[in-house]
Structure formats: structure tokens, C-alpha cells
Length: 85
Image (cartoon, rainbow, N blue to C red; front, top):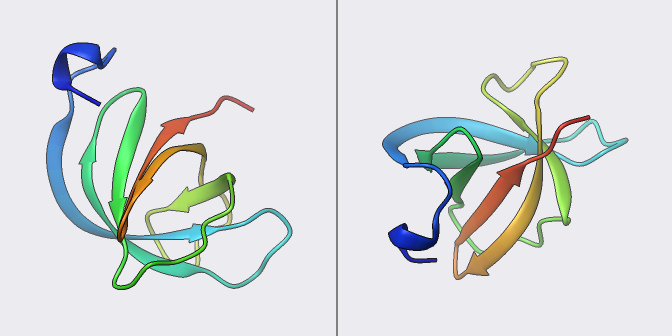
């Protein structure tokens, strides 16, 4: 997606995070590459099968996270939009 097509400006950020699928207890480690008020770009160490919807956690043992929906997937990176519950 080009920056002109984005609805919100992204802010570069390189920090650890985890994703968890609904009903799962296990988490997958990832890195937040950039973030905006509407979405996030995540990078994984290796290509993963990421479900269409997941919770983004900023701590591995967090009880709740931010709901996300995958918008695109390129190699080890995905772009996801934030979803309101």
C-alpha cells in the first residue's frame, strides 16, 4: 500500500510483540515495524501461517491484546488493521 493510500500516518517502531489466535494459549513472537492509529506492520523471524484475525500483545503473558485483521502478507511481514470488538 502506498503512503498516499493510507488513512493514517505510520510511525516507525521496532519493538517486540506477540500474537495469539482466538482460543489459543500459545503465542508467536514478532516485531512491530511500524504502527498507526488504524493498523500495524509486523515482522516474523520466519514465514508463519497467521490466522486472518488475532490479538496483538505487547507483553508475552498479557491477558488481553489489541484485535487485528490481516490486510496483506509479504514474505516474513504482514500488515494488519485494528478491529474494534
